[in-house]
Image 1 (cartoon, rainbow, N blue to C red):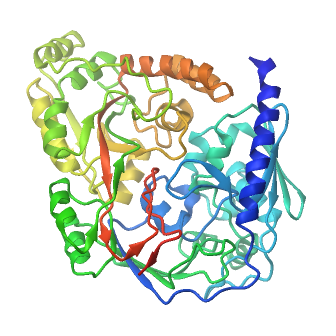
Image 2: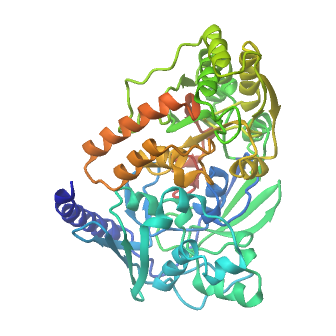
Image 3: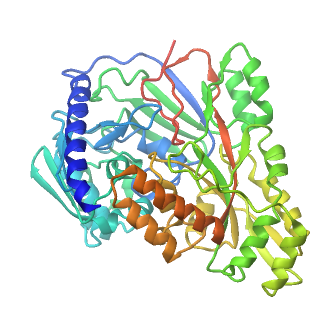
Length: 545
């Protein structure tokens, strides 16, 4: 295996630099700011963001409100796709052994000017180093004054794998890894790696207000944060100095926070907002028939699931988890909850993800066998348990309350008494990270197109304090994930991921419920919008007629 790494790395480096050079030629920094179209777009979003610091969040709410509006990264995913292209780095090189990445930054990239910060310099290597050192070094000044967790950085193993980050000169940054990491570039395109302004951070540290980073963001992105009224609205201005010409086609962008999907739909029809998120499945046909609307759709890169907290008794017993799993009537759930816009899931990732194991099948829905399995595990009379239901609608779960009620009824047939619990979305995720739940409904939309993004983020030992809501650390599974991450040959990685999926199916840390179709209703006069396969709502290249 080790003998093939240098050859792969050389080819990869040559390919990446060639692609990066071509892309960079088309995305140079604008020489002067062009006036923005005098257009305002209102987006009916579904929930309030917990904050505007992308490094500490994992949901599409924060990624939409900050990561893809205010910020940029060294590399980016192409709009509406999974391909990695140049971002703040116009090109990069990879060493023959695959462990050193050298990024060449763009010149002339400006940080945003706001009411609370006025930059005196452009982006440079110090900003990149600060961004990653904050997540890597517990003694970093920003981290010490504003201590928060960085779930993705930890879940993906970057905390352990990045050995050092160096500014070689003002426009060159070098990352040295301890081990080869096949998904590394894709991981750098995710919102949690959004580049901070070192000058702004210094200003906050001097004032003793480092926590303001989470409320008053400053980045290099296409939209400038102006104000946030909790549970009501977020207001942005188009960035006239954005480094990529033609991307910003709005002078104003407003997020109207509208949790009720019926209200979102009513606002859309009245043209009070021009784009909405997460329509109810039962309303799709009506929305499609409206002559003033367009309803683009695509197969979702997602999975909705029920996680078992394996650190809580009796869920630490695999037979209990198997019994609960086979007692769930997935076909009925998909029919009633997804209304024809979903398909039953049996794997921890969607069928469109490479390395998906098509041979995996669910245990048959069988209450009699489930009850017998509970008796074998020592619970002939069942037990009491909490079942958490998400308070928000998501493509992977359009109605968590209804789903919870259906599962509650299914489990009652085998003597398991489930109490349905819910919290406000931010609190729900926070408490789940802390492991307060017994079982919980949650889901995931892929972030970077690599299998590690599912199996590593949702199920690895490194992620038990992050997005591994099953709190499941199973060494035979984890060894396969770590080994696959350090390989570069896709066929060999696939073999390991298939083995890992089979272990998952045997051990049942969570029950996959469904994969859904994603719909994004909007007004007919919205132009340039593309559905993001990774879940957030983006407004790059989006304009109005």
